[in-house]
Length: 297
View 1 (cartoon, rainbow, N blue to C red):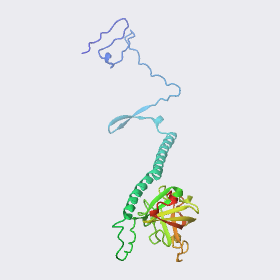
View 2 (view 1 turned 90 degrees about the vertical axis):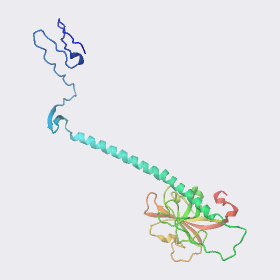
View 3 (view 1 turned 180 degrees about the vertical axis):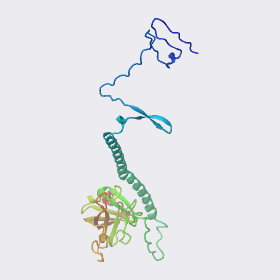
View 4 (view 1 turned 30 degrees about the vertical axis):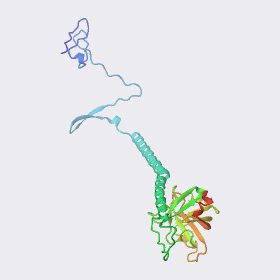
């Protein structure tokens, strides 16, 4: 229990038992029997605005709402709109940066991981079977056609310091993680046109436009290296499929050379054109002799 506080004489303020708890402020007695009038609220300083409140009845009782002075104005709405627009633009910019980062680093990492798997598959397919000292005793088996999506060759471009495993097929599923061989075109080293398509991303044919006549393109087969020399580059429309014909740009003509054609989208970040690189077989090197000089062998 809090002891009651007794009042004091000689003009000291009288306090009741609740004054110690701050419930009732002290009231000064002026001596004439009337208490002092309540103090006036402080006047607003320069630049300050007095906000009048008014009660409003609701289903839950009365509540205070802002007066006409504090209702949203056109300027406040504009400021809010500008702030929200700025936040949305910042968020959109971050999304674009994340997407660009994925295109540059994320997708390249995914493609490289799949390329490692394809390289292991190709090495497994090329591994010799049986006793190499025993020659074939019957007719040579006819080679089976390659299966879509399966690795068939290695592709190297020394100038770009790039290499890939080429798979069979040019559908979106086939070339998602690797360059793809046009099924009806020639195989590496054969008479005709060994045609290969690849996406224009940083993991595949991104820098294909840097190739010039005379640059080397090396294709790795099971037992041989095929070294091609670039002789022409061109930009065509997407429907000009004659660039992958046995004789490029001459459909129906009989091939007389062993060619290589690389195709990709053009320009970068778009696909309304096609970038074409043509190369001609320069020489062949047996893999038993080691890597070709063009690859630092």
